[in-house]
Length: 110
Image (spheres, rainbow, N blue to C red):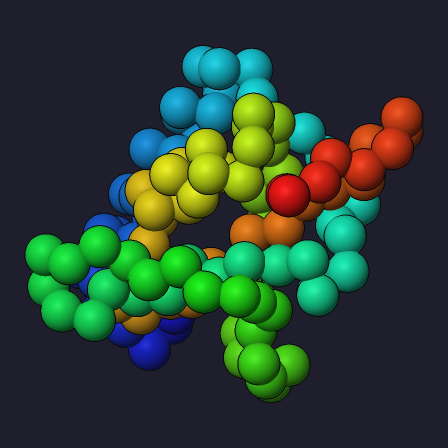
């Protein structure tokens, strides 16, 4: 991230700001333990400008990849979570989406 030009950093952070605002307005932030990496779904950068991001099975293939942070939020299902993840999809970042463990059990992505 630090290697990106300032304007690209600002663009990436703007997407995160928008997502944070939407999740805050919905009262949807949740802080819970992540489920195992095998439950992850990836939002890959779009292959071409203007194309939709690619959705693939996760998790990140390499542990040496950068981990900037994470969001824990409350969504109806995996499809809704992926729609919000697309708000911060960019050509320079891969996103991992996975369910969380609740005190009352696990919310399945199936």
